[in-house]
Image 1 (cartoon, one colour):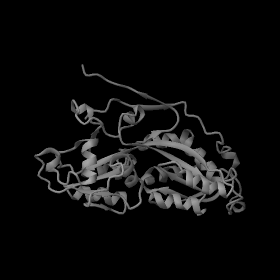
Image 2: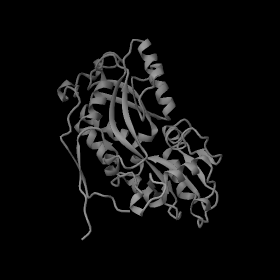
Image 3: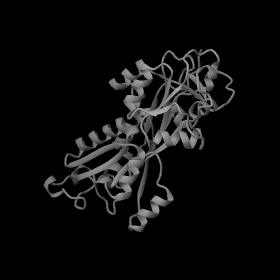
Image 4: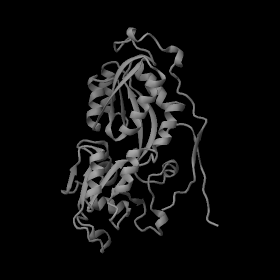
Length: 323
């Protein structure tokens, strides 16, 4: 399958309004140890991050701390439900999550006289992963729903010729954002197949699909998109990213798309979701500074390299035609 672009270039990315007060704002680290005496570029903060975005957030944290040497960001990577709960209970001041807060969650924070700050940082594409030997690497959304609900319990029901037997559906973790996404946007409330289990992490999910030809899994695009990353290169040698079509009756193989940035930008890839940093800080502290960095020029370039679609800036898509 050919992607409809040769390259993606980002220009005109603007820094967020609180733009870190620049490097000159770094302070004496000994004076910034508590939750209320840090600045946007110094101090110490704990954040909770949806594990789906671990590769990209590790890059963001490392780069931020190299630029602002008196800033210490301690990130814990967890399933989505635990990430949201950490913000609600005040265990952390900021989270990275693939949804906005619910009305009930906002009301709970407002009852504490806290107004959450939500910053969109990216658009993610969820990748459907199958074994390289699986002949069914092109799937429609209707077929995905049948697989995830158990209506199609074997690969033979998908194409009639697939000899791989019963389908094992693998998620990264219980209570994860990918599990919620499948139930909200694919099965739409219908119960999941009985042949479903959690691999406990995204690397474990990828390893399971790589060693079980009958399995199918779902991961965030940043686990398989940055081809400069040695881990991504290893994953892509062992699994295959399926093409997905919105149409129940695709006219050609070109109707099946993978989670390339171009398809995320054009909103044609069907399995998309937005990614946010949400802060409960009542002042412009380190959580606000980190969110501004990720939403600013350097942070958005990291998003671009990771394979997700940056939230800000202009992307030029170049389409080539065969001669």
